[in-house]
Image 1 (cartoon, helix red, strand yellow):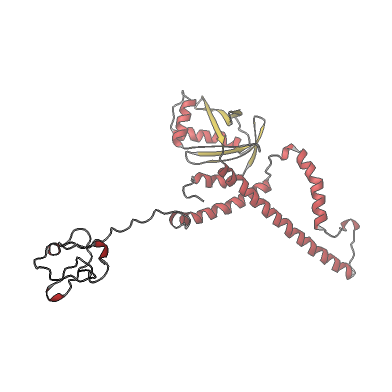
Image 2: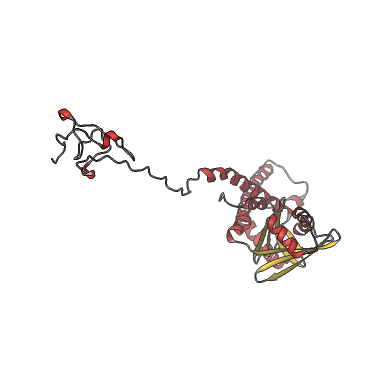
Length: 321
């Protein structure tokens, strides 16, 4: 997960999709309300829309839609949450009214209620959700749910096969059923799957009430899948922030190049060896007795004793003289 991602995405991820009916429009909705911010996600299985608002944006819109009301942003947000949450959770809005308005790819939920004896208006102006958000909030959790359900079916099939073997053992040892209606056929996974699809697929296509439905069992499974994913994100976030091997860090600045002092008679710097203990290239001064003077590589300014030489040069040590 990107460490710069909005934390509200994590909170929203842990909320289940809930079937809601607003103004006769069947939707799946999930919403998260913080202290003074919210994030709403809607889908009608034809598109996905979202809106996220912080305290400053909420205050600006509240003043825009309610010019007669003067209140703090906390007061506006507290009333908005109280009036909108029942609608967005599928329970109806009580005294508050909500309608759906679509235009230019934007889905707007218009809310009308009463605050301090005066009309209070609000609009959830939901624009198209980005693909990354749809994948994180809907596609990946649904794929994880399908894998879990498939694994559950596999394990149930294996359990039924073992039960058939157990029943067969009872029969071979003389056990009989006291009621014939309890007798079942041996479980055949392939035949059962084909028969199940043949019987239920037409019903699923013809029943509009199941398009967009998330029943209680699916909501519980979705919450379990997303809770585990959110926990993994929390554990990975410090590593991604400080030690992500995939992150491209800016290169460290190179240390300033070390320079070697050139004698007053001039020496070729390309033939000098600044890393060696003794400078034996042209331009290295030689002291009395023919001993070469040792100079450590210097950075920046040099010492006065190295700038000036009070004694004449007798010879130079090197390939060229």
